[in-house]
Amino acid sequence: MPQQINLYIPILLRPHRHFSARAMVQAFAALVVGIAVLCAWIAIQNLALRRELDATAAQHGRERQSLLGAIAAQPAAGGNLASLEQGLQSMQRGLAERRQAMAELMRGRIVDGRGPSARLRLIAQTVPDDTWLEEIVSGSGRLSLRGRTLDPASLKPWIARLDHEPLLAGQALSTLQVEQEAPGWRFVIVRTGSGP
Image 1 (cartoon, one colour):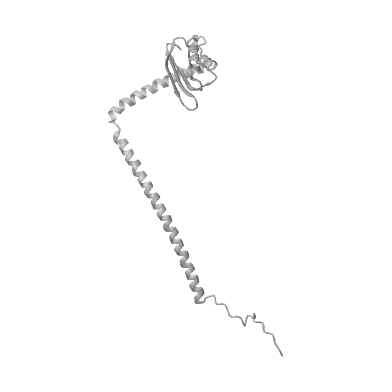
Image 2 (cartoon, rainbow, N blue to C red; image 1 turned 180 degrees about the vertical axis):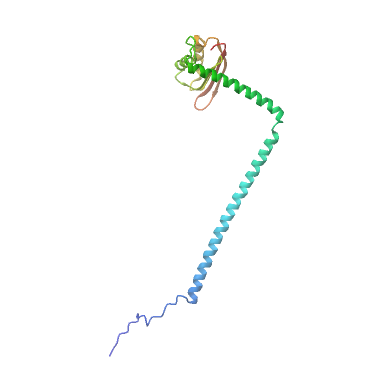
């Protein structure tokens, strides 16, 4: 009587050996390749960090030499002390002037309509359209205007108008600097004299 035999019955199949010599050699080879790749990556990173450290050390050395040169180039403390004292006195004078101006502003003092607010109002009303001011310094008979303009020719009529203003009587134009800068022109106007 014929009988069918199923060749896929687990008893008839060849058993899989997970720890055979071949499987162990393949696993060991994969481990060796993985370790080799990891070592190569670490060596490359180490080389890059070493180069960066050398560059940083060289830059540090250059900065140290520059600092030592700057320290050595300074004059003796005795000569420097006189210039520091002069600078201190100049700063103290400027501080006293600013305190006086601040006190006048706090009291609201305007002498015959010629106080600081009247001068600022005059400047604001007369400044040309294509000109803007960045700094106004007023006090002790000195008026300094710094700013920019798109048309330096517009400064000439403005200065002439300021010359004829009774509020600025006694102050004459002492400095006018105009330099070209993008965009436009930078200017400095300084008026000095016996005026307010």
